Image (cartoon, rainbow, N blue to C red; front, side, top):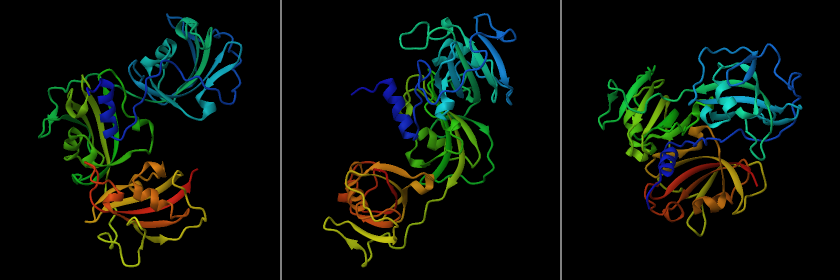
Length: 391
């Protein structure tokens, strides 16, 4: 089967552990509790600024930044929109959830207007219909009024070709150091790293949003990253940021290639394996299937999940030689999943637990990944804490 450009982009996004940020055709039209319209909602006041296109605006609160976003940049904003009769039709403030989008992917009044702003600024816009939805069925009609707060923005690279002075790794990956680090050690190839990643395709699609998720850097096994990223990471130190150019077709990159900004926030040390990682001890419980387990910490609940339950857990997994291969604790982020969508050792084992319980499992290969290429092989050992039975 031939891979499409979109699927190749998706492949590298998945490999990086990233979410693809969709390009919206317009603003999401959701309600939320109504926010009262401003007194000047019916028409722009005399002191409003006006552009040649007919867009009117007024600064409500000055910003703290000095730079303006460009047409191809991604922005994160809070906003509320009203029709000129004072009816609110959409608001990220009411949903308590900022929105992220490329300025090239929204109504023309937003594309033009947000470029007038700096970070931290709040501005009111009066957008004539020809710069808004242009009579589109189902969309708000007439002139629209928006209060917009520009929280921050992410500049899109100006070029997807590596510059002549870019350095290269041994495998030919081009990179430049954007910010020097403060650490003195390089990450081991079989280790984990806490990373901030921002990536763009040549058509301006953002394949990551870690910059907009303050404090949400991702933690990943380095060997799971695409080769161009691992080769660049090999010589990085904590605190360093590099821009990496991935050529078209390399590591699943789409035509035109990819540009990645990689910040090595921290080299994460693996969680040490338990002393009994090599084999289940004599006092472990063993089921008919061959699943062995031992309660490490008793739970506080009395209800056990069913085979189709959705649960939220913290966990760490090791191979029997003591190598950690995955951990939600390393990511500082519990994981949630339905029990009928995981390896059978987990499906069976979690049903033995109650909320608050922590248990160690020795899962034979036939109940784990069954020799699946790329997955941990042999018997696996997991420490699992059942945080919640979601449903």
